[in-house]
Length: 494
Image (cartoon, rainbow, N blue to C red):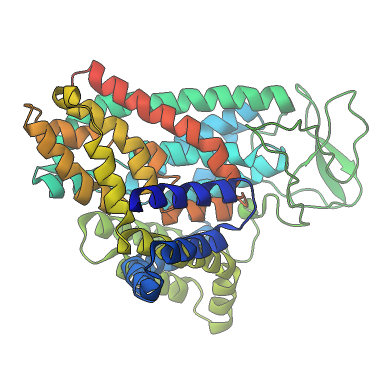
């Protein structure tokens, strides 16, 4: 009974948010509370929620101060050179922009933290996606998949959990998996190329100057026209700090405001109207913004390197590191109290959205675990593995990791399910190392799970509905996981 209710609760949650019948926060709280009553354990709901909040409180604290820290670093211009480099490569070609998103997300993912990856990637790429009317779910989907493949780094979490659960060395698990993971990353970039071509077909190709950020002459605005055209100044008032896109030749006359390109409805690129604010387009790249601290650039770079190094070496708990980092960054870059309050206020919306979502997710995970639904679901899945599949338990583990890491936390999967699968494999001569490597296969999909706090940073900063992101990314991320699994089998790793 608990097995059926568990699967039903998860399905109900996904359907309601994908159909936009409920907001993610409301669904994360109300649906598990209702199912807790169905199970007959409504009297224990408070205990389950408190347990869930207690377990996720360090994550919420980490995200809160990480958002403040990296928000300040973006404000003071630490990532401007990276952003300008990526934008020069991308220019205004949708294909290059999508591929650039995948490459940037993969590079930044080397720090092992999904929230950091998404904050930097979205801050760099969002202005281009918005200005060119590109599908924002393409950005969130590609970034999540690239980060999911890179999340298998030994300091990223899953590999360390698998090593701990099976008492293995993390390097013995990860190093042989590198060829399969490399194939997965190449597949993500190839998928980004395909999605970019689709966006290019839908929108056309525009051109930007080699230097995208420059001071515009007084009384003029920048207008982008169709493929092959040059940037043309026109007299008149401006409505934003970035270039204004006008339709390709034959699409109508340009004006001082954006002219939206046709966006046919599609399940791949949901129709949406960008939030057109007077100063929001390329604000993150404004070379004259008041928050820039060029004299402190190397201090901020060193502080960030020290912070990430300490995080990788686990010198202190990650929430403590980001708390100290945020306090130091604010104090040094903005020594005056009004300026510090202004910076905190500027990032308060993201902090509130993400932390609120994390604590709402605590209700969902608390009920799943407290009622025993997640244990019964796992036992049912393991019990229904055919006996003839025993010698192929590594393959079975890889297949199961795709849905299980989506519906469960990494802790629940690696400490609760993987040891059981390893025991079943050992009875048929399958080594724990093969099981551990196969268990990493589901990470590209896991990074878009509603139980992963970092995904709320991604969709929140990109102003994308979680349901839209889910509907777009699930099939592609699952396919990426299967490619990694196939490569692992081909190379004899799994």
